Length: 364
Ligand SMILES: Cc1cc2nc3c(=O)[nH]c(=O)nc-3n(C[C@H](O)[C@H](O)[C@H](O)COP(=O)(O)OP(=O)(O)OC[C@H]3O[C@@H](n4cnc5c(N)ncnc54)[C@H](O)[C@@H]3O)c2cc1C
Image (cartoon, rainbow, N blue to C red):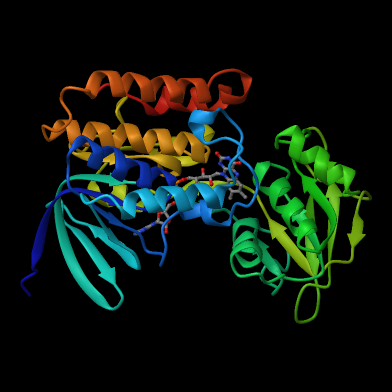
């Protein structure tokens, strides 16, 4: 069957903070952009984040995530060079550079001169007995239920994972009226920013480090969970079990970059644990090993929204520049974005990311 293929200058796949900033930057440089997101709205993860962000003013610090999403969405929607498609899932990236898109029951094909993949990341899960009982969720899913749809998943929750997401979602569940029985963390230290961990501790929630979930139990749905302690080698210590009566278990055990489209496109991938798993190799401008294909945001390595926005801007700027747009301001703008990215990744907090990037960034 003959496919009808539409041409485009730049296609951005994913309308989270990375994709929104990529589209805006490329459009401001003068390029025409098609922005595609499978959700019915733009903003990605940001739309469910009710807490204030960290960082400096240029990174929109102290604004709440959903407010940042609203502002970026307004800017994109009002830019004449950006064509927005929501409810549009990119399901294939073919060898001839064509993207297959399904939108509300209709399929169309796009052949962009440049593609920026900003598809974000997926939640990981954990293997333990009865982990398929109703009442067990990923933390991101719970955050969507509570903050977007106003639905509480239960009354009393065990949170597994004390990284930023586990601790922030625990606090938001407390605010929404749930009881948090405990947070367990397999590592010997809390991974979350201290300011968030201190807030949940002040609310009386115990955080058990070097602990994990042993099993969930319940006849038709979760009725409780057993947790136990881990030794220095990460092995469970029999006899340390604690039984918690909960009706909800929330897993916050990390994210993996969504790189399927990049793999289909033939981009070279590498396993970089510091960035969350398999990521595409790319140069300093986020261009992958397939010329004209860029990556940005959590798909390039799980980090934070502030870094995702800057990476999106850098990829958008370079994609436009490579098509002949924004030649005059390019160097100055590129230097400014790179400076902001470096500031975000400086100091001990950025150490892990810097280590990961040293393995993922190559000279093309
Ligand atoms: C609870 C929580 C708290 C956080 N707090 C902070 C914080 O305080 N500060 C901070 O900087 N960061 C924070 N983050 C991290 C931040 O949300 C992410 O790093 C950021 O959203 C990543 O942006 P992104 O654009 O790469 O991906 P996403 O925001 O995940 O957006 C990806 C988009 O791509 C779309 N998509 C995916 N696949 C396809 C496809 N095939 N076709 C079409 N569309 C597709 C998705 O629908 C989505 O809209 C937090 C995250 C969570 C979960």
